[in-house]
Amino acid sequence: MTERRGKARTAVVIGAGFSGLATAALLARDGVDVTVLEAHESVGGRAGEWHQQGFRFETGPSWYLMPEVFDRFFEEMGTTTADELELIRLDPAYRVFFEEQSQPFDLPDQDSLGALQEWEQTPGSLTAYMRSAEETCRLATDRLLYSPYDSPRDFADPGLLRRLPRLLRLLFEPMDRFISRHTSDPQVQKILGYPAVFLGTSPKAAPSLYHLMSHLDVNQSVLYPRGGFSAVVAAIARLARQHGVDLRTGHRVTEVITEGTNAAGVRFTTPEGEHNSLAADIVVSSADIHHTDTALLAPRFRSRSTASWERRNPGPGAVLALLGVEGELPELAHHSLFFTEDWQRGFEEIEGRLPAQGPPRSLYVCRPSATDDEVAPAEHENLFILIPVRADPDTGAGGIDGSGSPSVERFVDEAIDQIASWADVPDLSSRVTVRRSVGPADFEREFGAWRGGALGPAHTLRQSAFLRGPIRSSKLDGLYYAGSTTMPGIGVPMCLISAELVRTSVRRGPRRSLLRRFRHRPATQGARRA
Image (tube, rainbow, N blue to C red; front, side, top):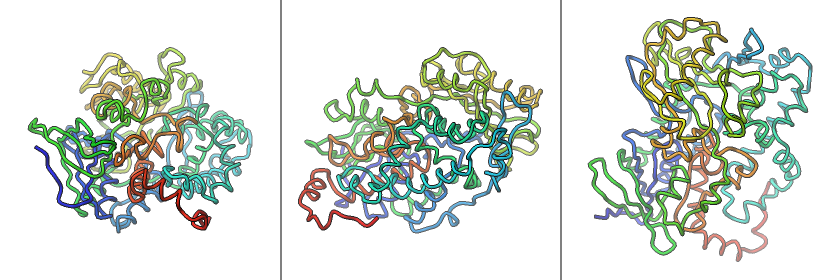
């Protein structure tokens, strides 16, 4: 049986993570009749929840950065961030533990740059670095991030062309080299370089363009949405429904239907196991592009060959630990980072260049109960631990109360011991009352993540900007991609921007008519004001 929608312009969105929900909401506001099909029983994708013994754990993103991107999305939906979310400034923004340093470093909410300069043992040029980070961030948000690069005119923006020499320098100089030109202090270098981890790569492999990330946590405040990112998911889903989006959970898409060289809808299974189909003029896949390519499309319509995928860098995997802890943990901030002395070796292990060794490892720990009293019972703490590992499903799956794969549980045990030692909480392990782990095999099984990756393809030079992945298919008119595996990249703000890029491409129309309009456009229409 084939269901058909009533309106002339219809869309089906595959997946109800951030990018899928945001795309659906924006298209619906444009008057498109949108249906979202989500395989899981709840929306949010990787931004999931787990409730256990009075704890509410979040399983996905935890850093609220680039607030202007959230502001822009909510404004596009006819509302404001203030109307949808309650944001709390974190002070300190985060705490850093160094293997070779007994005293942790707190980055304060106010005068963060001054605190970094005071911590720096050998004075460098941090003021110039932060000024450059701010300018680069402005260039990215004004010129780079909001262009789908599916038309020649996107590459002919005069404002972008004027900045091309500087942009090329930032693209071809590695981030670690750029940092070392501004500070020789190894600890400050790590603080400036750690955002590369959340871009799925290392400071050595990331283009220095991404030093803009330091503007987000040093020049700007780090915020927390009350209720966590589940509150952000709920806000976007609410707006989507208010604009008429049909959100269906428990519906797993199994194929993109094609008619000639056009996407024409999808086939899916219902929660009852029935096989069904839905016709649509537009199909947007917010699933992992590798999953879309290899599981949902016929070979002739795939965006990349098998050989091309083998040359791609999947980014890191992760072992996650969700811990309920008895008693308070003031030793940890809301966000805490643990950096090893030889952290470059850690990156090389994650990339598979060196065999994995034992602890210590560079870690990230989130303690949302430091800010939100609704995530843990009274006199208890909620901890989320992220341990970057190689993207490899063979590492194993997680489980509850230590029941996961031995290798995954070993990562968790070692992380708990490391945190206990570095943060001076010697009885931490004995105070854990709730425990759940997640491994790369879970990311592959639950989200179709390529090689069990936790974040998305690494932001290397060959996988950044318009080289990362298409917003519209080059093989099928009417097929679009959203999410962290396409432009502009990893992170919730980037997923929201990818939703806007889909809307822009849909507004422009099919690729063939887009190119035809550009070729026949009068020359006087080619210039745009900078």
